[in-house]
Image 1 (cartoon, helix red, strand yellow):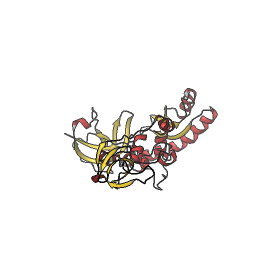
Image 2 (tube, helix red, strand yellow):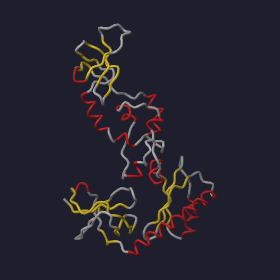
Image 3 (cartoon, helix red, strand yellow):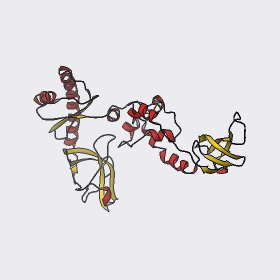
Image 4 (spheres, helix red, strand yellow):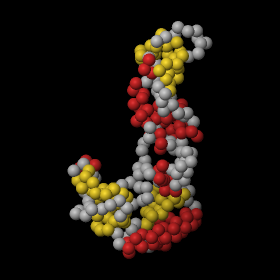
Length: 288
């Protein structure tokens, strides 16, 4: 076990572990640390705690010191510079006629580098733009292309549920989501219904997936052949959350309506499969 503190550098960003040394830190404190990008100012997201060695990326860097009033003023000044840099960069992008959308600008704490985050449909040759920006800001320039999910996280907004985006409110890291999850949860595979404002699959598909996976272990799937108190039949509809099935009975006329049964009252003879056919995958592959 190792004593660490968690530090984040963005309001809803990934938490990185640092060595607190002999000091004790509380959530909300601002600290100065050394990162791969250089010296940065971050916020303590989680105070001193013990974590397993395998959870740590070595070498574990130490916290340099608590942030001073001067450090916090420098941080505010950097934010002001970022707004100015954003305006200048947008004009330069227009001058160079580049097919890219500027999303955010970030100064490193010590001002040694300015990062420009942008989105684009494909690869962009921005070498001339970098030279132009370097001549204006007289510091190291880095242009970083990001995806639409990262763009949504940086800009924020309201989701289809009416609440602020999960990614900009509390998700430190994006979790993998797939079309198969939507299929297993019995959702319509209409892109409008399963995609977020960013145009990708909604992150919230992940939240209940573990519960659905657990239910699917003991629930006959669509197409399963089952034995019921009324005889043998084929499952034609499944409601995972209510634990009920609709079964087309073998001993009834073809036009007869399916009968409803509780999952606990049927026995699986041959289970079905949840599949996403190739045509559906082709239509929806851009959502993942």
